[in-house]
Image 1 (tube, one colour):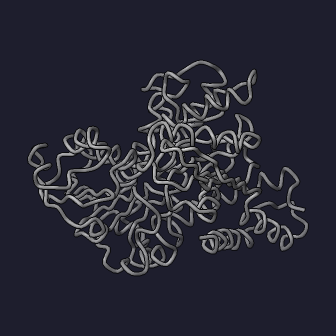
Image 2 (image 1 turned 180 degrees about the vertical axis):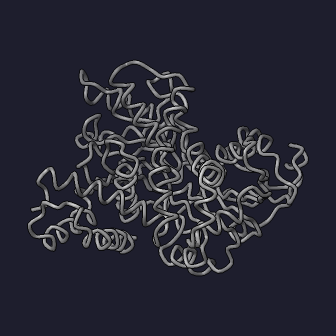
Length: 457
């Protein structure tokens, strides 16, 4: 992954090197760009600890935990804490890097950070998870805080864990401001209304805005373009579509419900998947019924015929991994990394791919999809709803004044639309894919700030 990260940075800087309007005050452009490459392709700091945790059965375990801090030129480090058995140092470094670029792209005044704890939360009791969460705060107490590094939920964690962590931070740093130390908290603990749904709503909005709002306003312009992505977009505009959603957690289920309710696009969700299975119905799945089922089944979709019948859901049960290659028009990826890769990329049939998860498409697969003219709405653009509303939560905590849910969603959509309006004309007007356009813009803004702060030499 770090190899891909360096490639992203280098390609973005190469695109800017010949642009004399970018940082015109530089006296030695070659040296400056070499400095930028080194700064952006490596993290500022990596913190690692082994949390010592006594379990309910009396045994004691040491659980690896990480906090990667990539860059804070734009503001305090910001990023989630992942509770998953696949967490490793390279992963959190890469995700912290992506957070830096995501915040720069959307002009959110944060840097990039990411944390992780190597565990499967399903294998621990609530009491044990509480202790693990509090231990994480104690081990990393010196490097996190409202103006240093602000963690949030990620895969496997949620508002419960953030509440526990904020309480522990308050205890460790008694007498100092604490509401902004963590975001994604419950509303009663200073969290923001709409935070849990923010990422999923933002993911679906990027798709709806691109395929409906933007095309409707720019149809003639796109029709006159030779851009292959414009051609794909117009082919799918204003016609019935089939959609598949991989991952049915906070992001996937919310995005699926947004799609199910949206009257502006004629589409139906024919497939969804989770960690166990794929459910398929060519006539469209009952998304509200599936969400209700997951609420009382630890987040899992129905996985047997008996469960489907008891929930009155019509669906065919398929293997989990078939979802990405099903005959659909739109594929929404909201699970793990590396879901479309070299061994399955040629079997992908969707013409629009929306990345609700972080890095679900490998570099090789991304290049192949772009060559085929497939529209990929990248993670850096699509799944920023969480960090944007986290910023609103952080502001509310500092001001101790709180927005209504309607205000939060209005501000979220305005922010994401602003970014879309900035990126889509470039996407449909030059040879770069949308991901590369987003990276170039983010690197431009970040590099300018680093230069202005005198950090190049």
